[in-house]
Image 1 (cartoon, protein in one colour):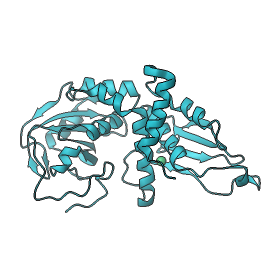
Image 2 (image 1 turned 30 degrees about the horizontal axis):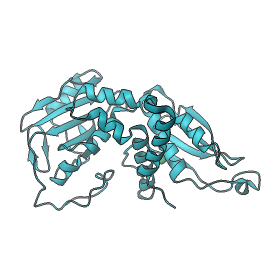
Image 3 (image 1 turned 180 degrees about the vertical axis):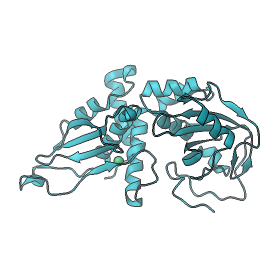
Length: 305
Ligand SMILES: [Zn+2]
């Protein structure tokens, strides 16, 4: 039977809370993976770092006995992402793997071809068929590493700031991208995040209320020249501690140009920048648009009218 990824993450999270209490953050995914798989016919018996350029992570069956390996990129460039990658692979193990037994190794080696090789979070390059599985593993990782009750307690009543995002990334041991996505997913404000390189959005995501009001990010959209210049002239890290107030006329989206509060970080990872924008004005649902049913992880591969 298929297990919903949130549900499985919440179950494991409750287990950790029971055994480790309030002291469980950031989650030690390697220990958890070994502990929960120990009594399965096909445990996770090896978790290893490798250093292949462009490689993110993999769940790989052992070739000579029923067991699995988690392999992740341990290049220091990936440092902020390894925990999420491991949790993602654990997600594949819990949600998607075929259970292996001695029967699969009768000839001495594994005959089936079960391999989960994973591309970076939110990449647009996934094949449609793999996409759902990848999204489920990401959802699992997000809910395992940042359980929603604890997350809500951390951000309750706080405005978006460098301090808040640093607190989230430190507490949960995740990258700013993962923290920003979580914030966008759960904020009741109208907000969007964009990941860009060289002045163009690679991908982005709108909060639920922003999306309902007709706001979304097209990949390939140009960032305001002013913002691109500021990113180019900044050193790594946040461009400001508090959000920069941008007047109308700087940022333009599907529903026009409005004043926004902007927090941008220049990332050392693949020369990307992440901008988080909060819209001051609240709009009700756009009447001229009939947005498709909300799908948290799928705003970029769809075509909109
Ligand atoms: Zn994957």
